[in-house]
Image 1 (spheres, rainbow, N blue to C red):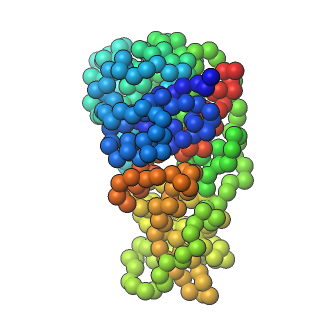
Image 2: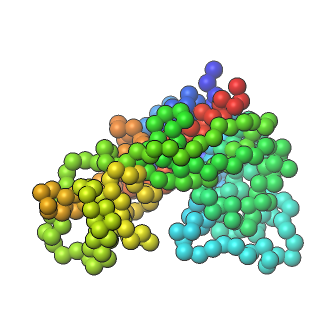
Image 3: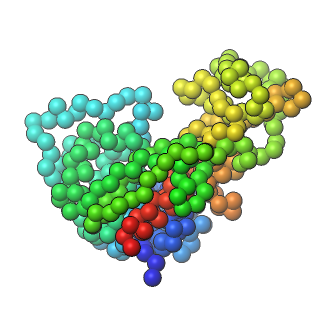
Length: 333
């Protein structure tokens, strides 16, 4: 009988897609955004769905499963926010010792979603818990207390995995995207997990449509855009096709023979193509974004174009979920 999984903060279904590829049955998926739930349901019709704010859900409403996958919000853990969250513990007279105190001292909703993992684990006593977030989550002042609730409090054994999706190749193909995430693996008994190592990474080129887009000189371009393109072509003059970030800290793009950078919730990457000495320029389309994440070609997306980009950028890379779940299943066998 296949192992079963609960997918909290499931989004459009990247984690569920990876888990089902690993042979797991996803019993229930929950998320607060109706459009993401609609997408998840269109692609995982045999899974029960709950459109809800997880913090308001009584864990008793959900069935117990073998595995809990949770992807709490990473918004205020990421350095992309342009600020750091350290130093807050010094403001408190004493360290929190209970879950209720942790939640009371953590008013920011996006970080407080981490506590929902503890609530569900306390009630259901899952055999395995997999939590996904950005690596900076370990710099969260409450991270040691959150982890202690699960280990010292509930008896789980913790393994830390930092995995770039471009290296998730132990149980299938990796993706043409450099996207690094922290995974907390919590098991009832100590397990030995395999090692993910950096190998030859696949480029985005074969996942792009052939359409080069309009000529670069067909209309005026922003100075910052032209500066990025010039810097990219200067560094990689013979690539023929390049990926350039439309915004962000990066000032130089990459040849399309390399993995694309991390996809975000907004249109970010442009494709520059040289044909007979003439440069063409366009933004990546939704289908290319989905392929860069490793979603199946027939995956159905709901909502507007910006909704789809947001769902893709928020998603767990299916290949990463496939590798992590497969590794845990193998270690438990």
